[in-house]
Length: 131
Image 1 (tube, rainbow, N blue to C red):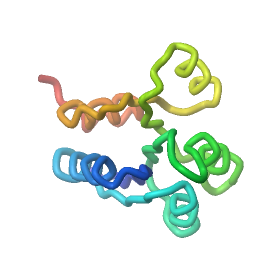
Image 2 (tube, rainbow, N blue to C red):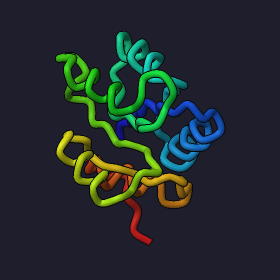
Image 3 (cartoon, rainbow, N blue to C red):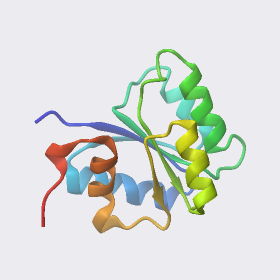
């Protein structure tokens, strides 16, 4: 089973590291971390992760702007993006769906279900365990 690589983008270091630990320790996925939208775009100049978990609310360049930049670049536009956000109103979800994001994971993150949520959104069935 081929391992997956996920880029985790969040300005909150504790949350970014929690998500990375969950992805690495519970699913065995490799992770990259970025503390800002700018750093995310820099990483994407040389790396091609299998997916991106992207915080919506960040100082400087917010997640929506980063997502639009990723989508407008022919070499990164096909990378699936899952938004991490505390914004879970139906109108926000509708807006995100219209943008073409693969999915939305609500904050606060639930470590015990994070892997299953990511795998289900991305269709990575080999990582979904039935309990």
